[in-house]
View (cartoon, rainbow, N blue to C red):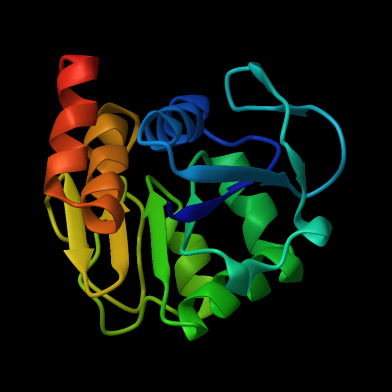
Length: 178
């Protein structure tokens, strides 16, 4: 099964993070949640999330995909962390999937992997290297982007579809009544 790395930072959007983690684990993907530091982090609405490990303990090229949740504070923290940017570059450079939602595409942009790609993000977030598509979920090559909290389920199911196939995505969606 695919191995997925989800990056978490203080101020991340909890709906986006937890929905992706939950749906990908329902698909029986191997999901590793890595924080920028040890211990519990506070998400944007005060929900406490406990990463499985830290970014220093993972080898990003070993993963089939990397997922970046949004949430302005989390995005700012990821953009300011070279380890997170290097992880995205490493997964992208290995020809694997790079996925981001809400303001998360800003992190991809800072990592240098968004230029020339079709992408979407939260309305009002200004991407500088590509125009924002007005679609709930956009797939361009090995890039998956989505708009925000309300599109979290569609985003997660698209990751399942792309990495596990349409039948698996439909099976997971059926179990979720999605």
